[in-house]
Structures are given as C-alpha cells and as structure tokens.
Image 1 (cartoon, rainbow, N blue to C red):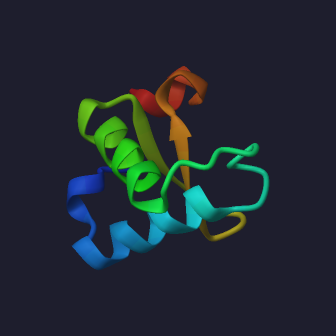
Image 2 (cartoon, rainbow, N blue to C red):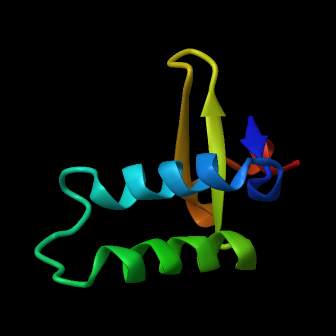
Length: 75
C-alpha cells in the first residue's frame, strides 16, 4: 500500500526520512551532511520519484524509488 507523503504529520515524515538516510549501508562512504541527504529524499518525494510503501506483513513503512515499485501498486 502506498502512503502519500503529504498525509503524514511533519514530524513523522522527518523521522521516516532520517531513519532511511541513516540506515546502515545507505551511505556507501558518502560524507554528505545528514540535512542534505534528508532534503534530497524529501525533494524526491515531492517530485514523485520516491514513494512511501506500507508493508502489512512486516507492519513497516519503507521509502522506495518509484521505479522499483511494482506497477500494480501504483494503480
């Protein structure tokens, strides 16, 4: 299930983005400041290049590139 980012409370969205950009293995040696990485993700959400996916089985929200989301989820 996709969750429109604009429906989340600002603090919730910020925590979700921060969790994503600080997750182990996501920086790949990137020394870009945390605020910049978070802004990039926020902009990708606003442009529709990234989406928030809720997985009922794991009860988790994930950020994904829209291109990686199964097409049937986007309908």
